[in-house]
Length: 255
Image (cartoon, rainbow, N blue to C red; front, top):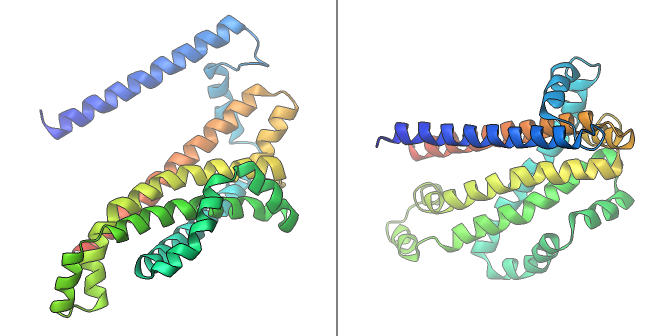
C-alpha cells in the first residue's frame, strides 16, 4: 500500500470518528432536551455562523492570542537556552532541578492565584503560558542534548569543527525530535493554561471573559461555541508553529 493511500485511509477513518462523535453528541442533546445543560452541535454550529459578526469578536481573539503566543515563545526560547547550558554544565542542571520539578508539580490553578498577587489580569495569561511551556521544552531539549553521541562529539574535536558546524551536523539532528515533541505538547498546554488563567483573572476583552460570561448567564450554546473557537485557534497555531519549525530544520540541514 502506498503512503498516500494509507494517509487517505487515515483521514477517512478520523473523519468518520468525528462524525460519529457529533452524532452521539446530537443524540445526547436530543435525549436530554435541556439546552441549558447540553447544547446540540446543530445549535452550536448555528451560533458559530453568527458569533464572528458581533462587535469585538476579532479583538477578543487577538487579545488572547498575542498574550498566549508571547508566553509560549518566551517559554520556548528560555527552555531551549537553559537546556543547552544545563547540558553543557552539570551544576546548572542541578541548580535548575528544584525549579523545574516545582513548576511541573504545582497545580496550574495555584500558580494562577499566586500570580494574581503580582501581576495584572491582562498579563496573567502570558505568564502562565510561559510557565507551563518552560519545563516541557527544557526537559525535552535537555534529553536530546544528553543523548548526543559522545563519539560524534569527540570526532568533531579531532577534526576541529567550529561550534556552528557542531550545532548543525551533530547537536541539531539529535535534539530535533525531542524539540518537536516538546513543542507539540507545550503548544496545546499553553492555550489550555492561558485560557484557564483568563477565566480566573477575567481580563476585559479576553476569551476567558467570554467563557466566564457564558457560564454566568447559563448560555450553554455560547459556552460551547467559544470552546470550539479556542480549540480551532489552538490547532491552527500548533500546525503553523510546528510547520515553521520543520521548515526551519530543513533549511538548516541544507546548509
